[in-house]
Every structure is written in C-alpha cells, then in structure tokens.
Amino acid sequence: MKVHVDWDLCDGNAVCTLEAPEVFQMDDDDNLQVLQEEPGEELRAQVQAAANICPKRAISIEG
Image (cartoon, rainbow, N blue to C red):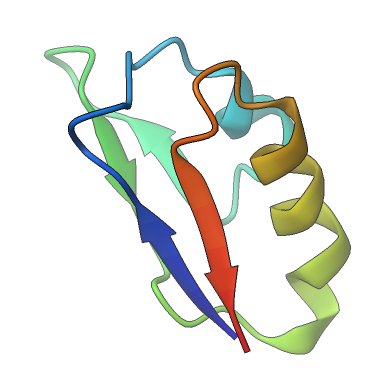
C-alpha cells in the first residue's frame, strides 16, 4: 500500500494523526508529515480511517 497526500487540498488540521499516528505527524511548524509512505498491511485499517476522516479528502491509498 502507498499513501498519497494531495498537498493542494490538505489543510493540516491533523485529524489523520489521531487515526494513524505511526503514519502521519505534525511538525513543529504545524505542517503535516508522512512518516511512512508505504506502511505495512497491519496499518491499513488506521490509514483507511485517516483517509475517511480527512475533511478535505486529501489522503488516498494505492494498492
């Protein structure tokens, strides 16, 4: 699985970090960082939950 973030849509509201903190994190300047662009299958449910909760639908999953 590969995680994609549409940076033009992302507001940096951080709700994805609550659902998948192993994959998404906010930096010191409140910018979203993707910690794992290709997380393991064991994180699929969390990444999917993060994509689903994103108010801007900026997160997508490939594979």
